[in-house]
Length: 271
Image 1 (cartoon, helix red, strand yellow):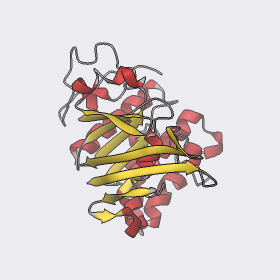
Image 2 (image 1 turned 30 degrees about the vertical axis):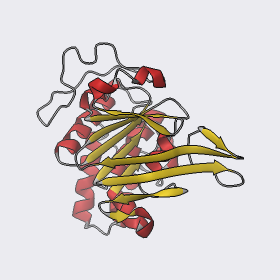
Image 3 (image 1 turned 180 degrees about the vertical axis):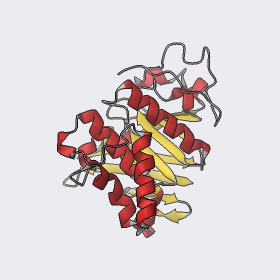
């Protein structure tokens, strides 16, 4: 479980900018996240939605200590993040919006293997994880491809595979479908569905719900760093347009919102 209690994050005033919010000014500082309290249980599929600058990225980066709150606490699986950053970053895998922020190796296979190798796993286990992760993003057989030769969408797929290979307890994806073609999006969605069914918490940060609304258990809507919506998808859909979040037309006409392990793949639309 991820537990957030009274978290506030600010930037400015001579300090490093902590995220994407442009929220409320506090003197010469800006509040990116304002007094957020939240619990994310095992196996929940949570959408964190909001317009650009609403604080989405800043909030989720507190989950594994990439951003340190100015006040409040964050705990992962019962341990405060500030007490054990290594444990938090092992338990909470994060796919950044820009894959260039997390690709570290020169080839696809080496990059996906980087995290598992640092866990001290056996060669056989590393090979299994790399193969499974690449299959999940439709990149089987591309282990020797050079990262520098990949398109933006392919780099996004490698970034996702690298986090999947870590097999975290909680998976956070920040705008994960940007640049992905239709087969890749469907493959990633199928993998997210499998992870949720296996008990992994999945947190998707987005301002566009087309790919994920049909999978979600809950939607958290942010505005100026504050929680404005926290509800099941059908209930949340009523209020999300006020946050500049587009709800797909007919989203609830012909499929259930809270889907389980037996679900069929939801339809997606190219962005």
